Length: 200
Image 1 (cartoon, rainbow, N blue to C red):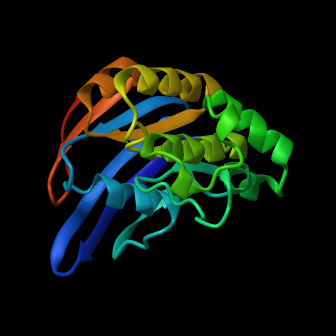
Image 2 (image 1 turned 90 degrees about the horizontal axis):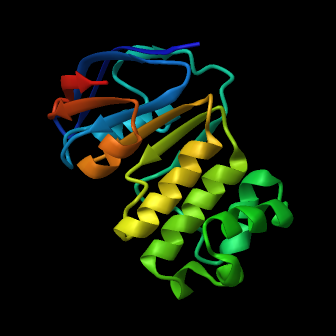
């Protein structure tokens, strides 16, 4: 089932971030929203995830879907170690959490608190949390932040492989990542967010 975004509009502090924004997402594949920081990509992400309610318009096709998300911020609980941060989304199943952290090359970091890890390690904990939740749709907002090129490549391959036959929405300002992993790239500009062109 496709996801349809129909005439979404939203304003923040008097600035129009989305204005009658419409497009649709396929049932599967990797779709990338590519554009500069500040153009409205993250606002669209938050609308899709249900964190922001638009002023007008609607999104259809998400009802009953489970969403795995990697936010622009890592959103880790500072008082929980890596394995506990991941286990939160799978009913405290630490075995599943450890397996996801191993995929992220963090086997030896499982007992560390976020403050004891580098930014790149924290990013991978956030990605492990999305992997272990195993949703119907994977939403990625700048997933390679804090990762060097070689590590980013390994992590993206794991993510894409994990969501085969499902939909991945990748939001990024990194053209190399977009070209390498997306089936369809929407180049956008704004605000307000608008599609500049589409490449397949």
